[in-house]
Each structure stands twice: as C-alpha cells, then as structure tokens.
Length: 107
Image: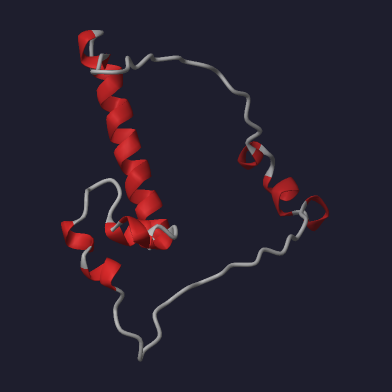
C-alpha cells in the first residue's frame, strides 16, 4: 500500500510540475506561496553507453544484500477500521495512509 501510494503521489507531482511549467506568473501564484521554476543540469554516469562487453563483465559488478519487509493482512485478521474508511478520506492523505505511518489517532 505504501509503494502504491508513493507511486500515486509521484504521478501527481509530475502532473503538477507539468502544469506549473506551462503556467504564467499568475498561474504560479497561490494564496501563500509562489512557485518558481529553476532549471539545473546534473551530470549522470550512464553505464548503458559502455560497450556490451564491459557491461557484462562480472569484474565491474558488485553484489549487495538488501532486506525487504513485506507486510500483509493475515487471512484470519479483520480489515482495520482505517482501511474501511479510506474511501471517505482526503485525497492526499487518507485514513489508510495515516494508519500506515502510525497516526491512527488522527482519525
């Protein structure tokens, strides 16, 4: 649920950024803030541009361990109230989101 929410928020961020890029100064001015567009250039190493032989050479690869925690409801567990109320929650921060970050008391 957290990952899907992050994806939804990133999609919303991209949409808002695209709208702000197209807006004039008035369209970037809100009640309390004004959005500024700042372009900067960042150098990024793109390993895909290396020859295939270098990309596939195991001498240039390292293996790292990552632990991943997956949470799921037990088959016999009732659905939490916060998840049942999620459809009536605010669009940016729903009850399910608050429950995930430990803010169930905010409900």
